[in-house]
Amino acid sequence: MNQTTSLSKALTADAFSSGVIASTLTPFSEAGSIQTDAVTDQAKRLGKIEGILGIAVNTTTRERQSMSQTEQIEIIRRTREALSTDQLLLACVGALSNGAIDEITACADAGANAVITFPPSWREGPSAPALNDHLSQLRDAADSLPLPIIAAIGDGHRQSNGTCPEIAELARTSRKVIGVDMGTHDNVLHYDQSYYALKTIDRPLACLPSSEAALFHNLNTGADGVISCLAYVAPHEVSALYRATRAGVTHEAQALHNKLAPLIGLISGRDKTTREMVLRQIAHSRALLASTDASGLSDTLDTCTIHTIEQTLDEIALTPIEWW
Image (cartoon, rainbow, N blue to C red; front, side, top):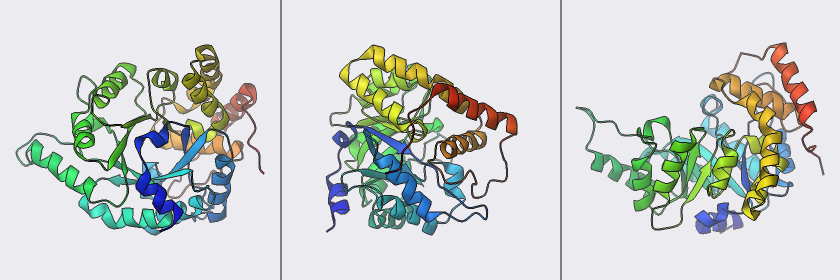
């Protein structure tokens, strides 16, 4: 049994309480092929930064759907090559189902420590199974998997009061669920309601927000860790923000979040495709992504937006990304 497999079997919610997970994008060539060496290089740069606990790959739905499963597994393998055995590697695999066993086994073999997966939401209707049957199917699917899972909250899981009872019930009944990706939802009231509902579960469960704009609030109300594209493009600052909140140095954390506000403004409030393109441009400008090209994406950013990105990065003076 190798060290990565051992870490996977021992992975618990507590593992996410010492840093942040950077959610990365994949570098592609102009022809649409993966730049595999660049995958390892960007992971190596991130992995050397204090406070980067690990990396999450294949998290962008559009990007993931544009690649074959073989390509997704290669990204996991090449990312693992750059990380130390005590750093985490999470892989997003899409929907939770019994049919995902082979895919998740391949993720484990390639070096993933856990997978991020989206449990299908239940909606009442004449052709829908009973809710208890639906929850039982989700639990059976989770329990059969070879890796622990981070259950991702989708828009269909949230009720009008912000809670997500399906996710909570799955986490309560399946030991394979070690955490919940709280999503990019910026409604802090709904986030709080979901957070407190999940924290009533009588075992440790990592609550991991992905939001950029509400990150300061989420960390200060008890989030266990972060899975963040913001940690990808501003790793030093997000790691420092995480440490400041853990140390109770509120004024320092607020100052860091204020510094990141212009960058957050570039990312937030955009459709998913434009958001990805903006993130690619930022990551490329910061020497973290070899190319702004993306598989299956023909759109490009206009020159005005690119200029705004470059101007913003100059003005906020983020800590440089270095190569060792």
